[in-house]
Length: 343
Image (cartoon, rainbow, N blue to C red):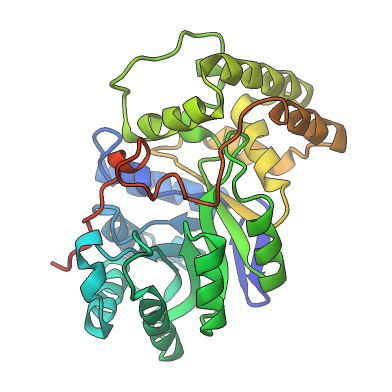
């Protein structure tokens, strides 16, 4: 598996094992099997894991993995998040920030967090700059090694940067269906030295052979990922256009003797400022395909072919996470906003 440096001294695998799928919204989780699966990912070279304070039980699960597999744990980098509850945004203070960060350290079983990614639900509520500066204080005393953000737009990312917060990574949604990070966000992060850690590259599994040539699914869908990314497909132009995209990706996949998901992720990894892609794996069923991605490089004609197709129809408008910030809108209504209260 390829690796990449976020800073001169901090290197991660270009594929990151995501943790959201282990938080309970995607079906039952066998905790012991999850630990065995984590070991297989690390042994295969996918040595960076992503989790969050709001992913129920996942930080503790990774902490248990560290305890049960100490040799493999030495190879592991863990990225977590600091996501203050929506109901607490107006009262986030130094004590709250420190309590959440120390809880993450305890759950993960570490003396220092590798990377903390900061999210703020509502920018109309002040305090996000102060909260980020508090994270910087915890970084200075050694509780945190590196700082990132998740789902910030350009204007508010610039505010943190200008306040002196040293941001090395931005976790955001990026795929052939959702190109919102291109343009202004890419330009700003290139100038600021911020790498993208991308989720949604396979749209919760929609970007796969399973959905090629099948009828549009009806609600309710099987899990939270499918619910979320079906909304993205709707905004992309609907099911018929999505099927046309799958056919384009399938033809390119045949040239590389791989699958649609591999091509979809390879396309994102080829974009400017993209450091890594986060794969939402509940188990190791697709691990061989994930590993094959390390050997798939799209040539310029294939990238142009995908871009030319994307230019022919609708696209998601606005800055990163702009649609999702509307809590009364289609995207915002499916979010869970209060999962981080200290216990």
